[in-house]
Image 1 (cartoon, rainbow, N blue to C red):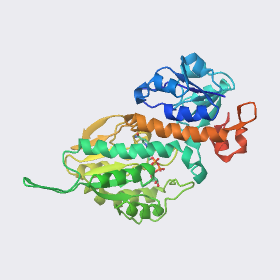
Image 2 (image 1 turned 90 degrees about the horizontal axis):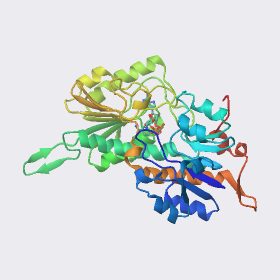
Image 3 (image 1 turned 60 degrees about the horizontal axis):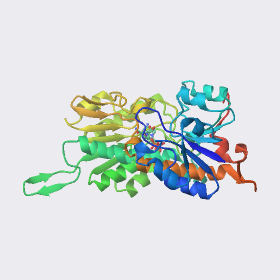
Image 4 (image 1 turned 30 degrees about the horizontal axis):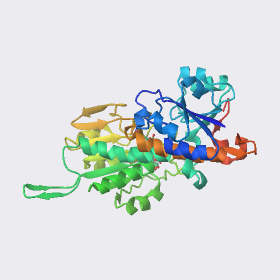
Length: 365
Ligand SMILES: NC(=O)c1ccc[n+]([C@@H]2O[C@H](COP(=O)([O-])OP(=O)(O)OC[C@H]3O[C@@H](n4cnc5c(N)ncnc54)[C@H](O)[C@@H]3O)[C@@H](O)[C@H]2O)c1
């Protein structure tokens, strides 16, 4: 079976769906891999390394003619035009953005396997790209904040004087939030964290941070490890109770997410006005409107003396490791998608496995 690895064309995307190391493992398992020339260049994986790993490096036409095409980002209109009927596309399709991509893919007869639909179950953990990439985002967001903050993160005692540790608050203690806590602790920050799901408290404490506990009158725990949307009353109470904690913070890393919904507003303009001049807010939810309404997507802006950072693709700032994790997830997925029939590898019926069944996006669904 031939797996095509496309070069990403989305602006600012530096990741690649398969790395030479993973290609080598797939070739050993009987897959044929064809890589678009230059696909790994931005992640520091040259064509020659793919060839050494056993892949064929070819032009885009040959790659898009593969039985299975693997990508990081959803395809552009021009890329969809290159796909053939019956091809299987695996990648992040960004299903919550209704921009016609899915309809165009279905009209071409492409079988769409959305990586964001991998269920959050133990068996699928090794395939979960949302987690592997959010982990990187949480780490990189803290480094971004440390670079923009005009003071130290750790307690510093020198003969020239001493500096207090930064007071850092993480909002949303999911994958990105927990990694942000761990990274900030490693840099010596004093960390507080808040999540609407009460079960996160123990995880926050286990990383050496202090949980912020608010009584908002309801639990935010939803299905599948995600939060549910709060009632209007609970949202107002949450903003009000968080305000004093946030106004004291010098750095806020905010990651609160409800799948396919606008990001909940947790940091109001009034809170930003109360924060100390020079403080930093890194808003990982910028792509879905931001946890702070002052955040601007893909920009760093200064408002009321506070730097607000709205980058939407932190994994692309750590391209080699982000690609390695993504590729590892894809390899684990490919292994459950195929069977050896004796005459080589062939695709299984996707409806027979709960993971592939959840990922396949049927026309009209
Ligand atoms: N900017 C980037 O480069 C980048 C990269 C990866 C992920 N992200 C974004 O980071 C965010 C977090 O991703 P994740 O994978 O960690 O998601 P996740 O689902 O693991 O975590 C989100 C957390 O937010 C919490 N939450 C939801 N509503 C809340 C509220 N009202 N108050 C407090 N907490 C609340 C949830 O309980 C959950 O623990 C998402 O918005 C995601 O799109 C951004």
